[in-house]
Length: 271
Image 1: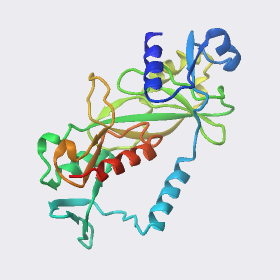
Image 2 (image 1 turned 90 degrees about the vertical axis):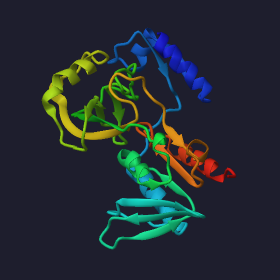
Image 3 (image 1 turned 180 degrees about the vertical axis):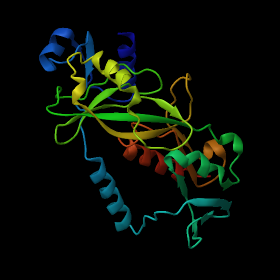
């Protein structure tokens, strides 16, 4: 209960005003398969097609005269008068000049920031990788809503999400790794099943099928308190025209348009 009260207070501070308490009796009516003493219901929560969203954003970029360059790893970045000189380690050794630079490199954001000549090393956070596995649930989904248990252990907990077709998946877990490897490791299935059955005791584990994995860029390590996104602008690092985005993990996609507004605001500041 105290943790949920903290969630509610934080939501209200963030302008989310439609969360409400749900007791066990109402929960049984809303989601009969769910076991919980109480919950917070978010009526305005929804789901999107993430791939279509990214294609739409790419379309907006290209319509504005921009281009997406794949397989163009950044090698060096020099801060110079009026902007930045970027050298890429692609086959053509592409070089470009830009007035503003937004480092939104996800897992590689800290590495890219380290390649910026003129950025104080003290501004670089430590980079950690947290790998998460998702299992798909065969057959009919047991819930009509997204279900999130109280978060713990460096992540959001093994929660339930639904896709636009109504299929359910569970995840992610948290496994700290040293390198980027998306192979699915089914060896801890029993731990996964136990985590799910804490709120969905009717789970038939035979319906769980390996789905996919993802790796989250974190700026805190195992056993450390969770950190918020780090949006680092000139007022923090002193380099005009530069914004670094560190630790943009879940829910980075959900917050992407708001993050973009904040980046634009910081770049528009004088100095």
